[in-house]
Length: 466
Image (cartoon, rainbow, N blue to C red; front, side, top):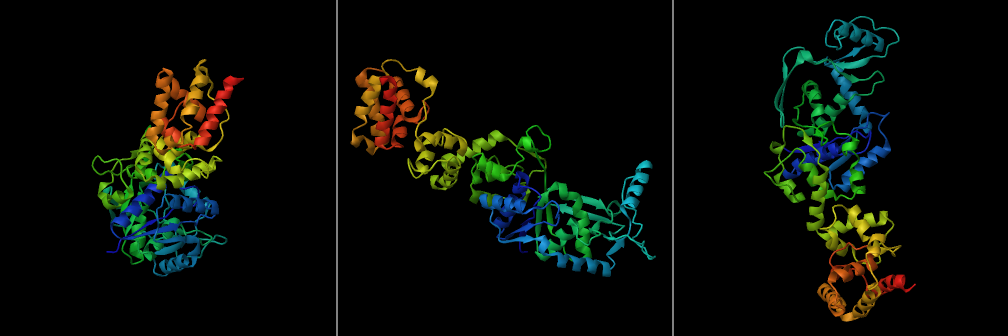
């Protein structure tokens, strides 16, 4: 069987992490099986679907590098196809016109609730042969079987059985003729030859209705796998306060796309005790059998930890693409100062996000605007002498050939002055960065040009000259 999966978001908002995880699992399954991954935009809800939301989904997929093989397909461009299918279902007796008005249905529901019955459409027009009511534009309902069962052999939940008598005659076309979700998704999956549908388990109750539609259309249903929901750290339904925000917000917050994918793949899937997966490992190891049956809970600290692992181990030239984007967002240019790759190597074990790295990098790409008052207050009257000694020592161009020689030069200054390195190092950092927190002295110096070091030492020396 040819493996074909799809990601089918509705463009009624941004791409959030729940949708991104569904896309990832569908992508990985297709890639491992040598199949095809399809992107379909389910935009039939014209009141809520917006071009901005469509673009947000496409941007999120591109940033995560979840490359689709076919698409994007848009349901609004397939309306003629849906109408043709509805006509076929009507002609074959698998669907019928229902003339019940909203007022009729409201009254029916109220009466059922008053009797303590489960609310539902009573199929009053299922076998109607009389004269249609005047002035009522009918909907089209699917003639769901009344007997038997629908068995869903779910890849995650296992065998789930639904009695047909519990399923209503769902509406497949509204009174204005537009098709509904359950009809369009089935037609699309048939036409696009989707073999496996991986989606959230909030769709599980739709599945038996859709399977009956497949059968009515003479098609074999795909294999389903319904993913448990993602919860917040407190076990409650995921919300914005938990991080249910746009995938692109994670970019804004300084996370790397591969780190976020690694985090998402572990939200409901496991392979032994392994936590860090390269993209290639995700593709080679992912299988539906490894999806957990219970809901996953997000853990922001784990994401921060994972992101740092990627900062430390990912090729700096790959990380530099995202880092340069953050520098630009902060109004900084990597055209001057050290290369982004050099900053990444220097600070990878000191920061967790690219936002933190960007802030740490600011003194390397922009003039200092002041000094940390607390760090400045720790200096004493010997500071000018130390700064003068550093200026003389670091004027030797031969030192700038290696980090080790720069490190050694600073140590020699301390020895010559008869003071501890703890007296020299913080002052040097203060002069270069405006604060006393940085990588080793040699590494910090190597990220500057010699002339800039001399200028910054002189600038801090002038603080005491006045």
